[in-house]
Length: 336
Image (cartoon, rainbow, N blue to C red; front, side, top):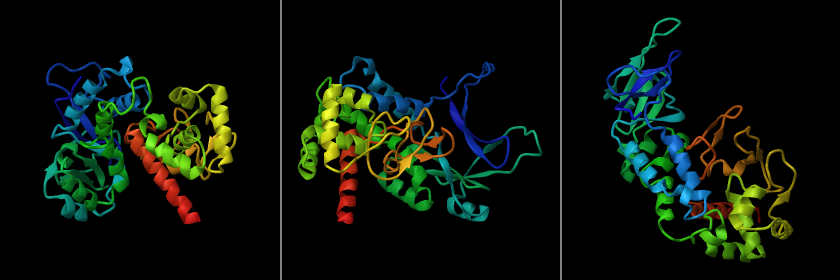
């Protein structure tokens, strides 16, 4: 059920504050009825549609309409998005000075132990910061102007948390994926995840610099960029047989830019050299160097902070391939 609005509410224990969807007026809803659009779930489905499915797949024909519905939700002036793990580290007095004097009401529910902890939510427009504790929220509709976004990033030390919201904003990675899906840049039936299709000029450049063929260059870009370049996924994206995949792996391994190993739940045997991050299901483990590009911070067990709840691309794949290549090329230049 769509919400008629949102409110800030103190959590049952401690000093936490959360965004709560407000249901329409009327009879009480049955227990467990979801209220408000699950915008991160919707965004995850869209990223999957635009980065992991073949172009023109009939199964994702409704993606553009779903995006418009999501965009309308994110553009509602009263919507607040919690900055996962984001807290302004400051005193209550300083928070009031920096983000006040505007305020938002904070609802308090009955608590099992003791009385409610007084919480004040200071509303600066784009950012709402609560005291005590510094729990922070972003109003997406207020940061459509790049200049406003710049000021927000300078207002508080929340760059990591803001980076996890950025793909959802107007002009962000998700919108650019939508525009890319309409561009006709990749032929129908091919995959954005195949660099030979999505960025052939980059593949040619990588092939020249590594001294390998186009297929090996494409595999290198996939290993360097994507969170889950499993053997099964790579063969699906690239249209390779197991035999062809083995030939390309052997060629790339000979170039000395990847390592071969057996790692639990990886689904592959070639990896970037460097630190490895173990994650529990449903996430796959991956190279630590990829965490920043996917705006992911591992927490405990299977929990992560990420824009979409799962480890998914944060920008169109041709952009991410190019960024990964530049990052790794710069690293090689520094080493030499």
